[in-house]
Image (cartoon, rainbow, N blue to C red; front, side, top):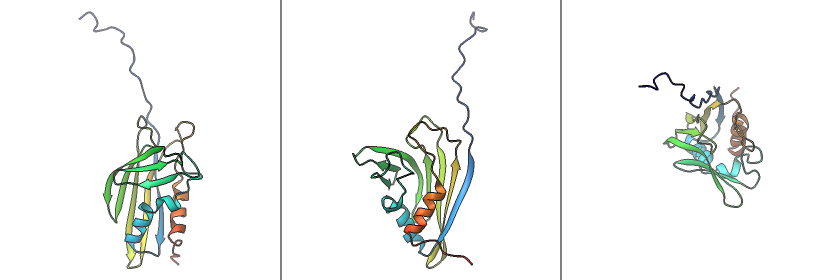
Length: 160
């Protein structure tokens, strides 16, 4: 019992990352199933890898059943997120780590809701961090990502 009041080393302290929850929404002139398939199966065709990737131009983004990955031209693969919930064609929930498991994951939820038989609302709710990633990493610009997806799907509907 001689070490009860000893000065043990301080544990490593990791300050919590400041986040805020934001939402991006777009209404598209396609059925829910087409929007879901375009977002998941077609991500390699529309994802803005020039600015929203680690490997840059020439890389490909893929939504798999258990992960979202980026593959470089050389075949190197980086896991961006773990798929927490996949309810085709209504919902995808992700724990977004961008390959940095030591960092806290950011939650991303993508919902596909029918507005009519031939239109749907796509909503991306995400946590935006304070930008504390390492060099070469990026914080997703979900506004740009949703805009590129909407363009790929034929553009947003005007709700006037």
